[in-house]
Image 1 (spheres, rainbow over the protein chains, first blue to last red):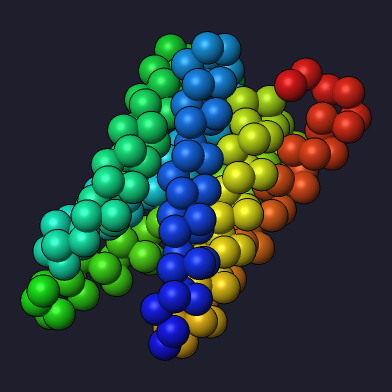
Image 2 (spheres, chains in turn red, blue):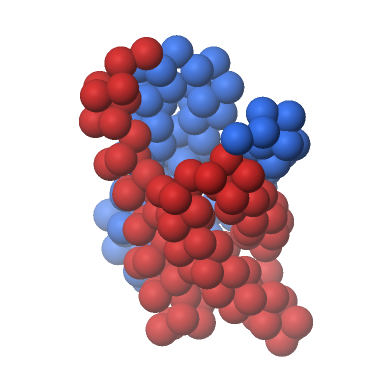
Length: 92
Length: 92
């Protein structure tokens, strides 16, 4: 393992997979168009990110804690909007 | 760091955030309803997952390679379907 080379991949990777949820959360909030969004995806993904956050605390990794806190907030927002849409009887 | 406790969080976390994209890819493929899906999200996310795959190769981590190969395939499929929808002039 080369720590310098791994950081060259790891930091932009963590940055991109975290901020990716900003445009999704913003679009879902603004348009309330959740029709193409999969409810099981966001249910599973949000649970997974919560576990990644736990992993960050257990391993004491600040980057993992920060990245997954942001993703957890954004993914939870999309999940919540999707649940509202499904409960509202809109097309799923 | 406690390796046993970290595995207790890490493995289910990796499993959930990976398989989460199965119902999304399946729903998008089956319905071709991509209207609520954010194009910038899937563009950024797919790039990020490709970098995570590079990180897995550089660090020699088989779980990271396997998880991100699956996610890369599924996220790329959703991105591709979204690009087809946008290029087809459908509502974005």
